[in-house]
Image (cartoon, rainbow, N blue to C red):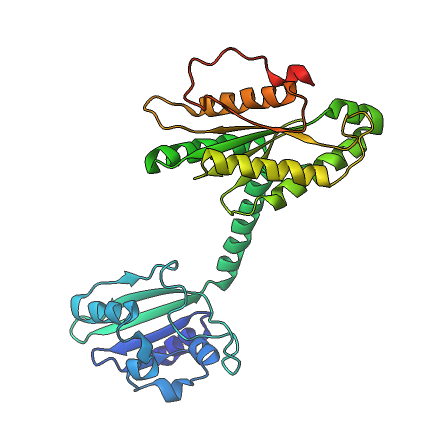
Length: 326
């Protein structure tokens, strides 16, 4: 009576229960297993476990069963490493995707050795974790992108320049930076209004982002009408070429700007390239690009100017912040 009650209890459990003996023969196979494998208990009982699941003989599951029976060692399989070891499906006749599983293997018996295998369906928990992870990634992406233009924001720039600066010094590869300013943008806002000013920044940012072809080149909104591009492993000549491409692409948009000499929206760009030396800091690269941008604006705007001293030029003359020219 008690044995029948125990079997009924095992059959009613909403998890898989398998018991194998020291010869790896199945002695217990509950209804949950039958439901998700399509193999009834009458077919499984007495069968060699590794005939039913040949792929598990040399798997972590097979090793754990051997250790449980012959060394009395329990095991809990890592869900991250062994998410779906058993071929279990919601509908075995339509084996599309395996159920995500948590597997526990426990030794049983003293004189006569057995092994209890418990399989729990953790698909819901795995799906929930995946949703939470996706939401976390989305929130992170939102926190690092500019809400108006969709390019990286200043916070993301600060993170990236630290990372790329270290990589540049470690790999002894050049790092270039473009500091980009939309010319006469205050006049544009005064003439066309802030709503159209926002649309202008969106269009300019999109065009420049599309012009940066290499996956490691990154564009950021540095502040207001100012943008910045980081160009890893890019020498000064190549950075100058890319900057001229960006300037030309923005001008070719032909966005009307009646209060600008060119009568269209344009940008001025300062270019600087990191030169390796022992005590350099990334602020020197930013200052060099800022100085080059000031000189481009002072020379008449809608042009590209490269820093003559680079980030290692400590003897360069003092310069006025370029925003004084707006």
